[in-house]
Picture 1: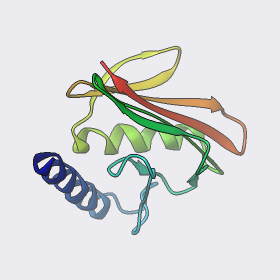
Picture 2 (picture 1 turned 120 degrees about the vertical axis):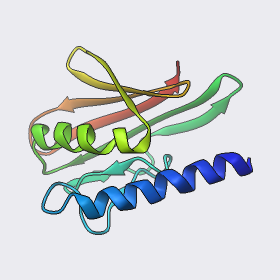
Picture 3 (picture 1 turned 90 degrees about the vertical axis):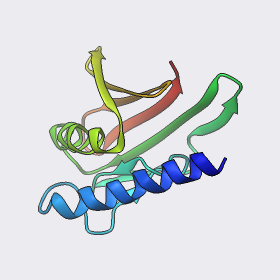
Picture 4 (picture 1 turned 90 degrees about the horizontal axis):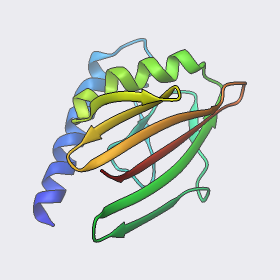
Length: 129
């Protein structure tokens, strides 16, 4: 448990450092994060739909689903996560059906742009590998 907290703190500090490096992009000075994932930032323009997701732990690992929407272009969401996630330990995987996918440890993160009209709707899911 303590090791997991230390790891999350390191990732949080890395995200803060990344925020200061990416000035003028989709990252804001005070980034927002998904409520169920302490180190998964949201680009400026996306707001989480609190209560629309699920989060629970299984013996095999955690399963998290969350939804965010907002007035941001699809290309900005893609660029934001391609820049931010490697600094948080996520390694890119081959995209499936245009969805963005990363792996960190034994977890797979999918960022699916469900509706590319404005407001843009983005679904996040984390599941065991």
